[in-house]
Length: 350
Ligand SMILES: NC(=O)c1ccc[n+]([C@@H]2O[C@H](COP(=O)([O-])OP(=O)(O)OC[C@H]3O[C@@H](n4cnc5c(N)ncnc54)[C@H](OP(=O)(O)O)[C@@H]3O)[C@@H](O)[C@H]2O)c1
Image 1 (cartoon, rainbow, N blue to C red):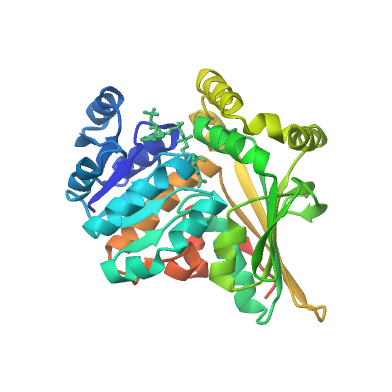
Image 2 (cartoon, rainbow, N blue to C red):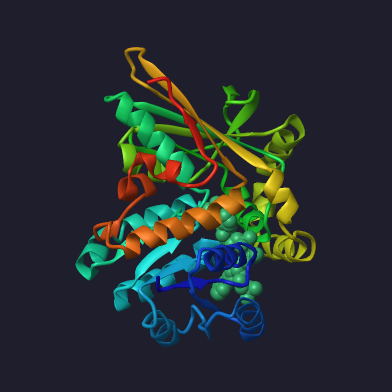
């Protein structure tokens, strides 16, 4: 397998590198800083290459050494575009682990270019959105004509990585997002709550602006989509409070301060926390005449899952299984793809 992990010395990039080595792969490690790259490459005995996203010639020359990139350097609002440009220019496949709606929409807008270049674009090859996208597709296949989709997830244990926290901080002032009649519409954050019957127990969940409002629409063409996550009462109050202060939170100085705080304080879950944690997903499709179908999916902890899923996606793309263009996990590999990953259980009544 010949691919690059960009952002390899970040929290998730390192997990992807570690998992790749465990699976017998030898990816090229890349990122913008030499010292942490060199250390990581020495630890794993892998080749490495410094390439800044701002140096398009350098980035293209690094990509020429591989056939695909797993882009792990986020927030992707800042990093996706230059990598996409370089992949399209060099004819290399692009995978990332974003969950950001704007990034999904921007990647999808380049579908025609990707087809012309013979390149596969697969954003969301991690926990966002592999399991939820596959669950959405499996439900939609079983209830043709569904016009509404609800998805929810809840993590038991674990924690957030530095990059996820920074990405959430960046998205907080923007509020909520849903898909209505085929269009993305803004809502206040947590504008809707509901009790979700996950496989282990029900949990109170609140609506969030998750990537599936973009990707599940592409995968299923269901025009009304809401995504929820389990939020305990205090977290829900905090999210609503943050919305009241969104003007302040959106200021560049507040964002910079927040990023520095994250860098100083957030380390991400360690191996033991990842091993113990578990993630539960639930989905429901319905037709306006009243028919509906629900299902659940249980997967390992999100960051460990991300490493495995991104590698499995890259492996299949490199095997030539996916036609060029901007795609989603379920469109690329089928709704059952998630079941091929370790420790995944799906329950759908029919
Ligand atoms: N899909 C999923 O389920 C999933 C799972 C995990 C993470 N994520 C997303 O992945 C991203 C990374 O998360 P993380 O926790 O791994 O982050 P992290 O530990 O902060 O690492 C981020 C990495 O990206 C690099 N980077 C950031 N901005 C860059 C830029 N402009 N140019 C070049 N390199 C840049 C950083 O390099 P420097 O140290 O040099 O800045 C670092 O190597 C986040 O957006 C997160 O939300 C998604």
